[in-house]
Image 1 (cartoon, rainbow, N blue to C red):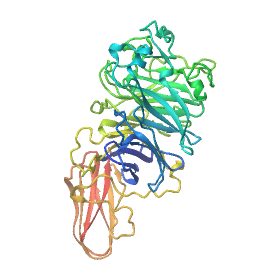
Image 2: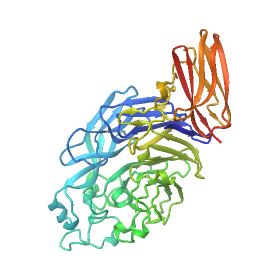
Image 3: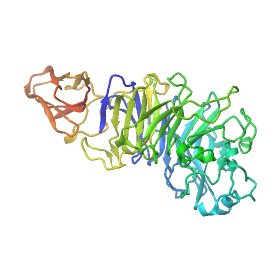
Image 4: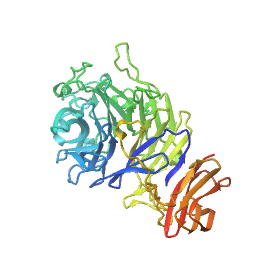
Length: 519
């Protein structure tokens, strides 16, 4: 657990993640060292982001009994660097609840995914087949909240954009395949009350568009954000003239009856996003494709696609396939949660959520960085301790470069790995004036590294290297040394690639540092 690989080809920055079963968000450097953390009163409502303002935007699991289900949140918070909650907004009642994800807009407002309930009578009146109707019937909507006033300033409801070919007596009866801009009220997966199961929301400021991921439709949708709430209820208005109807959809033509299951491209996907301006692939769409029931065999991938547009800039249906894809190792097939992100150097990180494993790969799919979340519901585990299935799950990760505005002026001193060392060894980082301070140069090595330390007085010293399971692989020093500077070299020629830990014991004190062997 913790850092497994840190190749020189990795994008250097700080990785933010929130263990799903614990009440803390962590920020680590590329060496797996924690540089900051934010505690919370409850478990997460799944997503967390570091904003350019330096505030942490996070969702929290509200304790209310309303609308429970996968991804339930209910409360959204802004938290400063010192852990103070500067804003909190609860959206949870018997009929609505925030869930899964949020995104910040350039004007400071927050877009939130939310559930709302419909009665059986309402669903049947909208043309839903009563034989496939489950209660409660929960559908998705979006609200935009102004944190300065706590007011909802914009709304979009999927319920306002329905079509169906089941009941000709209803007003929304039509030919589903002729209306890809509308949502088939009888579409999606059967056997679930969470009809569409949105799990991601993101925003494109240049286009003024919102994109969402719908797990149970195996689709991504794009809608206009420039319209008013009133226009969002209809089929006209806004920058693109289509009101709240879908501007684009991709992943599953069967959802609007222009294909079969064999035409499906997405398989219960998560974390859809536009690649940011200035990055390789800017403007394209990146998505974590979970791969559930993939016809070629269940496996997860990160897929990149180019959205086709006409001469006026309006979306066309398509493409037929992704323009780039990274297939995760078979043992990391992730049937739920999970995420991805593109970096400035062209690398892409994949979060295999159920396994709490983060993998960064090059455009050629070569792994260059790997980290395994060492935190479960009981807190950080000891290195080498067994991680029960799903115990260290993470919804998604985000990495921020050294020049990210939200990190400007912040103290980012490494505080040691999050995981605990065997025999309760602790990293002494952050106390550089203390005698004994252990350093390694380099910490990422092909064969040799120089380990240096200093003593303020004559001490009995033991310097040893251990593998991730806590087994000793090398004893470098085991004798009395005088005060002053000392050094020793570890030759890792016979050691396999991976993470090791060097422990320095002197007097009654101990220090440790992580080492990564690459080949």
